Length: 187
Image (cartoon, rainbow, N blue to C red; front, side):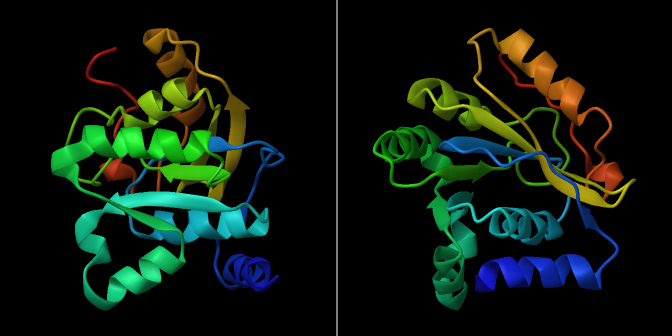
């Protein structure tokens, strides 16, 4: 109840609005994009809390150093060692299959820096676990955030990514100039 109230407060005190379809009613991999600011994290937590979703999220290991680690873990964080990304995918797939969480939040466009491709971990996790993906977004041009469709990936990366690209085509993120086009290196 406290989390839902905090979410309501966040949307009341700023110019952003929560616009969303119904939240998924099954475990899912949340694909959050565009990831252009640390505000994305705060707003995505607010969206999850609004819908009373039990979510975990992945973040680079350095975010979990020192006192920050306690807070990040309490908010559902899972540290990721980028040097051993394959091991992380396998661990996350196992956790999702065993029902240890109802939602896993991933920002596949990565570090908000200059790069051309999304990271493919979200795709591998969804395919290997058999879980659907739910598209989640922030759009600076309309000052809206929320959840989009939930669907199962088909295994046809090009077709799946075309569907994802179509959804995110008009979403700019908090800082539009940092947006990365939804594209996997190996599609």
